[in-house]
Length: 165
Image (cartoon, rainbow, N blue to C red; front, side, top):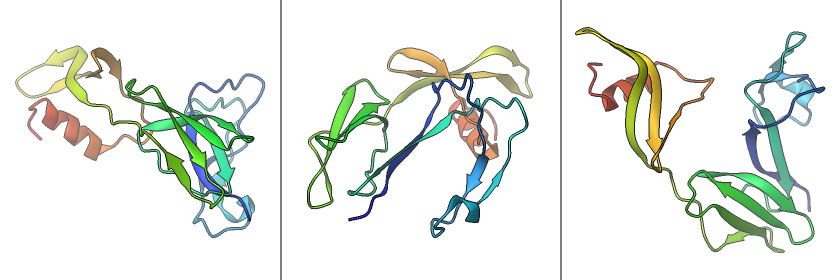
């Protein structure tokens, strides 16, 4: 049985010191047999991959659906994938690659619930809201880090703050 792409995510904590990215913005259709048949750009000298490095798991079980977490560890001996949930309840869940080529699990990660939104370092006028977005999740405030953020996302956030859109 061949190995299939089971799970991938971006490793934001990846230590890039001494290792520079060779490819960025990789785009494939999924039908290619080799990365040379995909499109990509070559980063400039000194680029340090602030967006994070790609982390990949290929197993005989194929794709595992983990919408609210990211892979932390895969044990080849027990075929057990440990997932760190975005929400701390539960903190970790385990998926097992069964002999029949399917994934089994007893618990799934739950979605995070955004409790509130605010702007810090803000400027208000009758005509606009401007500032750094912070979200409250599980009682803690934090920012949004997103290199694909666009007008649709901005519209939703403004709507959440009752700003005119």
